[in-house]
Length: 78
Image (tube, rainbow, N blue to C red; front, side, top):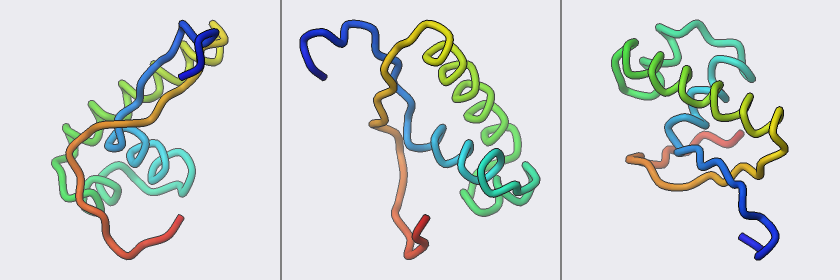
């Protein structure tokens, strides 16, 4: 983060993955949850949180930082 970026919203890797699978790739939530290895409720919570954070960043002009989370990488490439 640069000194002038005081307003930053952090999205976890799980939240980003939920957005990618559902909103970018068009998977149904049940399928996205299975791909992530989580329950549908967990997927929904991550997706809801990510959408709120992205909307806030866009409307208020905040930077988006992606970090953290609990994950394991697989061979899939975006």
